[in-house]
Amino acid sequence: MSLLQTIHLEHLPTTPIHIALYRNVTNASFLQQQLLTGNTDFEYAFIDASVIVSRIHVLSAAYRAINALHSHRLRSRNVHSEIVFSLSPNNNIAESFRRFGVTAATTNLLVVKVGGDGEEVRRHLEGAVEGEGVGFEEEVLAGMVDVGRVRKIYKLNGSRGGAKKGVANRVGNEGEEIRELEVSVLGAMALRGASN
Amino acid sequence: MEVQTAPPAHQAPSSQSPHLLPPIFQSDTTPPQLITQGAEALLYRTTYLLPTLPCALKYRPSKPYRHPILDARLTKHRILSEARVLVKCRREGVPVPAVYAVDEREGWVMLEWVEGEVVRVRVNEWLRRRKELGVQEGVEEEVLKGLMGRIGRAIGRMHGVGIVHGDLTTSNLMLRTRREDAKCGDEVLDGEIVLIDFGLASQSSADEDRAVDLYVLERAFGSTHPRAEGLFSELLSAYGTSFKGANVVLKKLEEVRMRGRKRSMLG
Image (cartoon, rainbow over all chains, first blue to last red; front, side, top):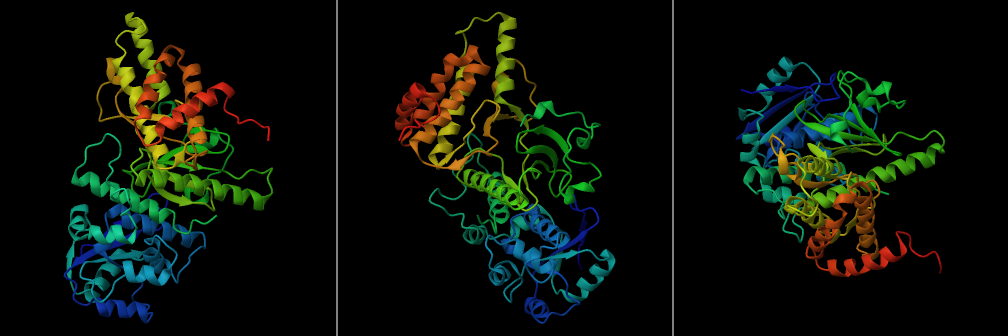
């Protein structure tokens, strides 16, 4: 069963995105294989949810990829691979797939589909993904994320003890910490490709 | 960037500005709302990703009098350098708006929306109320002193991570509104200091550049709030203890005061 959520991102009203989240996925290598062989029935961004901090994190990547699509500036094969690449803090596309995309070891899977009919997407995913569908919600994502890995990938373990020097006069708590991590991650993603 | 002077929603930004927004914003059902306009950039309020997440859109329209290639390069350079400085500051714990998204080709950057007002407005409000109440200058100024200290520490933190602002004024310092507390009396000066508008900022650890930052703010303070000028020393003493090397900057400031912002053109 999948709990598919359809979202219309701000400023992109004509391009809905469908998002589904799964845990205990057992056929990750099969899914990865479909992407590698270019099976056109599998036009999805398959993302390893353990490197996703929050809803905003993945929605940001989708926003950037769709913006690139509309302005004919895709850097990878299609909008779905571009979503995975948009999560990356650097310009290495293959590396971004290894880090953020589905791998044989993936058990928590986030699926993003740009456009298409929601009902059809739901039906296809039900047959394709073997796993337990869960809601695309902050608390669920928070339970899946590997903060250490995220910090490592985005190089957020600086000499300053990560993001936790604490923004001036604010109380530190767990929610605040994830929020600050999210902000650092968004900044790193936004600056990807920034040269000159 | 001045939040409270936002024009009413019914005024379409296009009626106030000859600039057309980048394509991605042109089909919005609720168009970005123009907040303020500077020499280089336009500032709008809009939303990022979800209707519940407000953001500031800073747009640098192309300048028709510049050669198109040069224009594109300058815009790209400025957008990116501002974004880079903001990301670095935020990561290192300097209170600045977060960077949400950048499109250097189209000339825009989306930043966290900071709810609150600029320090200039709040200080003037505070001074006005005191005058109404007939409180004498120099009396019960603890709250204002506290604010000056917070500003000094925020600037020190920024300088400590190797960034200079380049245009520190009381309009580029915001007080983030905490919850919806009714602003009465001394609470006008409450809130977290947030440094904004890094359009002229650069990465520098030079005492000279840091001292010029302080000097520019000192002059700005003197001209916008002459009644509060005497308290600038509070800001400086808080700054002095905020990072290693701050005292050298204060020494340098004395030198800068003697000669003004511009370095000698001799040699």
